[in-house]
Image (cartoon, rainbow over all chains, first blue to last red; front, side, top):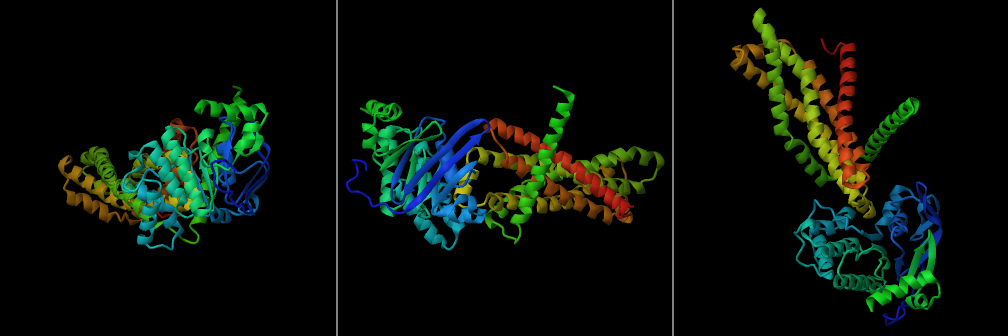
Length: 259
Length: 261
């Protein structure tokens, strides 16, 4: 556990298990037998050099892409054995915050956040409006409901994406580089929000970022992808104590930069 | 490049496109059984596709009718067979030129716009976001567009035909000095109901073809803004080809079964 966390969190069952994952894009091998595991209630930081396949990994785990080989078990179900309808049912239990926001630019911010809830059905307009207001307030954006996504800054869009991903209280949330292109203050706010969200709802989070130092405010442990495989998996302390040159380079350099 | 290799590559490209469009069509039909529509998205598209296209279709139709009358006017004047003016213009406009030109305008305005919209959603990961939010893009985006385009091109063709006849009548009255009543008498006495109905069948088929083609290219975009541009270009070209292919088969079928006289 990270030193930033006051209490040891009780980890539950495995919510995501990846075994022997292989993925090729043309002649480029992105994953070559990758193994990965995540347990309920933990926040895992997924790090690695640019282009190593972190976003691809998230899309594979959500069933948005198909692997060439290997097995992905999401919330106890093998994605390869599920129909598209079953995948949709699984995705209702999963949230995803995209690197490039992916907000629907033809809808207002309020409609963007409300969209998954409306599509799920079973809620009155008043219930939807109240929950949207609550989620926007949580991300410190209580007054942007009627604006269009194009009228927001990058940091605000990220926070709206976070509110949208959270609206249906998912069990597992993927954050694909939620602080890319943001200033340090906003980055810290985003990581604090991720941590707060996890604590409030007991969700499980996988966070992709390059900002390892600030990630420590949120993450319990880290997984370093390198050369198509998991190169390191462990806590920040284990990483800092590691004699592996690649792990050392990632963690120590980031620490030196921020100090 | 080796010519045989080039022919083979071209054949493969065409096969891939035809196969992709066919798969897209099957996906749409599958998503429509049982019939489930996203009400808001369907209404929005009916408005965008139909109401907003109405002025440009009316304009195209008026001039199409007028051109048909001017073209046949020289011979009508020379022979004095003014009664044939309504028949000539009506036949050409209702069965052939009207639906085809309205279809081409529609593909340029609505089809291209649809491809650009879906393509932009694809490159900005909005399509992936829909899927990640457990929403099927075919149900939510494609089916409403398909229904709207089919329905609206049918209605636009029906209305456009009337505008074309009005354009023909005005040209007949003011350019050729042939009374508009004579023009309409020629139209009605020719019993062009079959031509009108065949034109509507064409409009419906063109609507289906344009919607499937534009969604196929939109959802298949890759490579950022340049990819969107390429997809729009491909959509317009393929839609135009689709219109002429459908037109050929429907005309052939209508004539071979003596629907048209």
